[in-house]
Image 1 (tube, chains in turn brown, orange):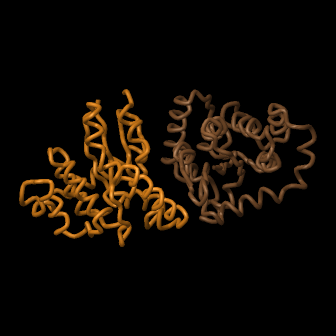
Image 2 (cartoon, helix red, strand yellow):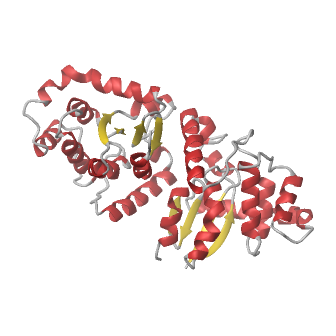
Image 3 (cartoon, chains in turn red, brown):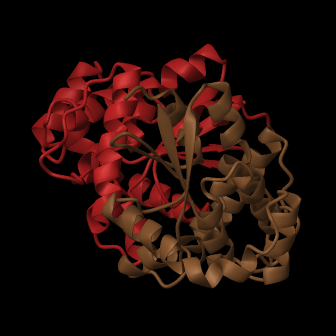
Length: 191
Length: 191
């Protein structure tokens, strides 16, 4: 069995999912496929030019408090980013290049920690570079990112075609699960 | 400890919450306060003139499938209503009158079953009346509903003031929980 993990580095609820998914999938013998994508174009198609958590302040206030509770329960540090949502394009392009590498999980977790625990600006190449080094990725990847832009665009198109409308999302066979809350259910899903 | 259950009879995810909340609260020794309200005015304030599940078709398609999985897991029948969302004003006005009665839970469950399991139109007085009879409510309540319209308006205003933006919602002290998924967390919350 394999599970696709559709994530966006700017997405708050993707943070607790990303931090535990590799461990949980391994514990259950589920193969994990990393699927970075961008929510921006998907939200834009719904007429939103910003995160719904900014557009709908009550929802946003609730989300930050809810995320606090979730992170406390999981023992994850949380520091609300000054900029939200962050520009995740560069980090996500790199994640697409990393998707089939053994160090991908470590890189993904480093980027989420930079964004949601360390108060760093993940749009900056030096921050992405530090995340790559933390994951012990081979040197020189960032220099090649411009040659691989198409991967992220293809993932985002695929997400839209699959009816993915938010992050994190999980796909098992034809079954879609949306939200950090659904990770355990997705991992237990039998095709 | 007591828990407020904020629900809207037209709300899909309120159905699985409503069907189990009284039993779960009792099992944990938590006092339950029934808080019927209307989402319509709250959605309208966000610029929505219909359910977001109709406005955003991908989200709607996902919700119906997700609800199917949830109901299957809980052993609850589910039959997708032909009209969605249903007009819940009358049923909710009656629920406000019932909120402090011992039969309130039975009435609430009867209305949700009528809407989401039996394919009935809960805007119709005869359907609401059948739900009252199923709950063994005293006769003649429906005739008095016009005198108690203010209760539902007050609840909806209170919901908006509390920052409630969807249903079901649970409130424990100052702590807000949103979504059927959060019921167990809300019941376990220590003030």
